[in-house]
Length: 252
Image (cartoon, rainbow, N blue to C red):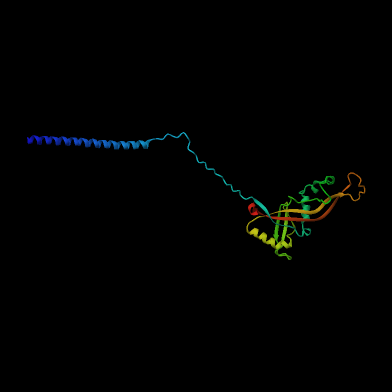
């Protein structure tokens, strides 16, 4: 009897152990599958391609404003102006005669004939104080040179002025004595700095014509009074203006 009970108990243990082993194996396999499934799901999520949106992405527009810095314009700034001294004692008249002889001066008296001068007076384009000069040297002088004369017995700052017309040089006078010392310093400074001085000039004087009512005409009743054109002469002069070159910003 006891042997039968022991045999049954042994069979029961054998059955119980075998059933428990199968349950653990299934659980492991199920858990392993779940784990693999989670990995697979994660991979699929990583590989998902999102369809492009039908609406375009907003584009950030950056407006670029080019700040163009204008280079300052180079302009002339006046340094000084003066009337050349001593022109009646030197070669200005000779220079004018040379220019006239070489046909460098066109249209004496600005091209006006005597009749045209009278017509201009009647049309109130001229009055009795207007002078129509025979000659000017505009555009005729090729170069003006300012030459120091340290050995000048009257002024060791003296500056001689030469003009060149068609390769011919003419000594026309001096920088005025009251300006010579200052101008010596100006010329020295510009020379040391390698800077350029520009100039313009104007011939004054010489023969000229004026028009007015004829004082010898006693008949003032006529509609067009008699006019008289007179020719007179005054001494030549030569005026110079000197300029330096500066930027428009500096000038302002």
